[in-house]
Length: 339
Ligand code: MG
Image (cartoon, rainbow, N blue to C red; front, side, top):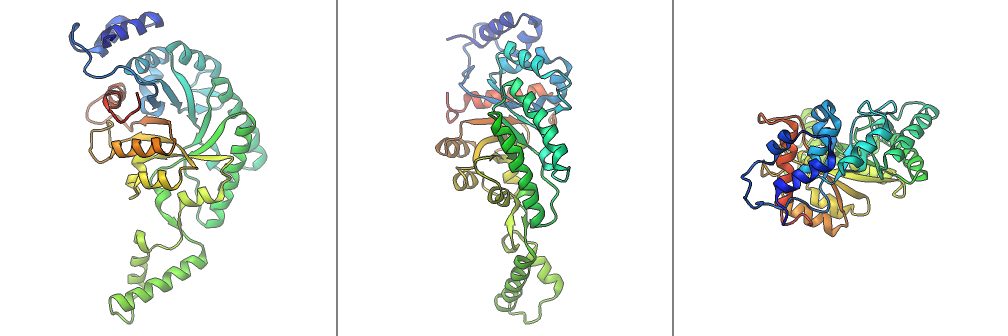
């Protein structure tokens, strides 16, 4: 079996653009030591937002490092005005090709700004899609929640998602939506709100034996997850978008922060959720709050094969690169992640 150190050396030689000292520094361990964990798996994805700042300092060297950590696929962040992280898309793709990394997906936030006039949106979005075809991305994902105050506005936003999906589909790309935690708040129509209010008043009267509940008491009960009328935003996005045009990338961590079970969502919406964000409080596996064995098992059973590590900030005194390296190590060693 190839040792980690040899693997890194080989990668560096193939790359030609890296200084050896920095790579040796990454490899660690003694020269003769057998690798404690596998050095590669068929798919280890990374959302490049995780290393945005440090990758931007020297993109070819940064990409080579990511490859050496065991990442195989990227989901890009940072596309703006025709440039990927300030670099021409064709050039960026070449850098990734040279590093041996596949651009599988990309986050682009425009469709959530659904109040932009449609003609303007279509023109800008076509250019965005064209640039992502150039980079070879198979998916474009909107990572930002649209600002919707009513269910009707949610419908309008979903029409824009459908339009984005239609333009993507014509170019051979799949469009999708990525959640944070606020998607697991509920929103109700005026009728649903009225109905919910009646139910809560009835419940307070009967269950708590209080014949005259105050307005404050009713509003307090209505604001609690289980009693809140209406539907989760995430569910409405699924209901109001065309399954042929819009898929979903479930961020498992934000789903948990939204007081939800990611496995339940993956099972219930296995026809819509096609990719995951593997995110934890900081390094993957560090917090113990995410049930990764169960999440991966459920995802594979649902046919999900693509997922991307995502780290936020650079806590615990580690650099962004150290964070994604540690996370890759954890997943390379995880027996429940496909080899
Ligand atoms: Mg995410």
